[in-house]
Image (cartoon, rainbow, N blue to C red):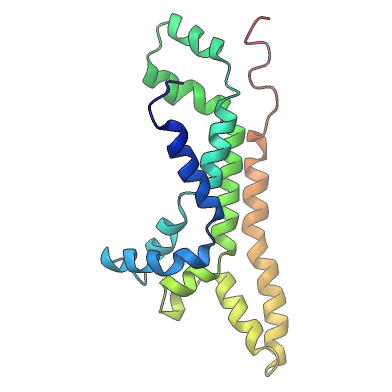
Length: 181
């Protein structure tokens, strides 16, 4: 991995983003999305949740485990840097990338604060925010208690399906035997 000046400082700034709570970022993100004309759209919620400082950290830590000998072997076989970057490294890093994707998907799926800030139309609310709204009314209308429980069960199904479908990418020892000692 080629080092550049300020790499550690940039990484530390990104990593400091883990310390910022989403509630502190809600208003600036809303103002930014309003300026872009994306307020009250699904894009405002998705774009605001797209990048995770934890994902950057996990990628960097996992990328350090990619053996340099594998990259050197690819170069000696005639692969260019872009081919190595697009074909070899993602396959080696697939467990980390799938983990980051699932963490972000679950975080976006379960996030109720950001949609509440970004969306003013109730029909655009995600299922988790709708269930939270129903839970607030369940004291006055008991039928909503049952619907909330059933809705919570239904809301978990996509997470279970996605985890099951992506389980095959969590493989240990992807580079086992690729490097001689």
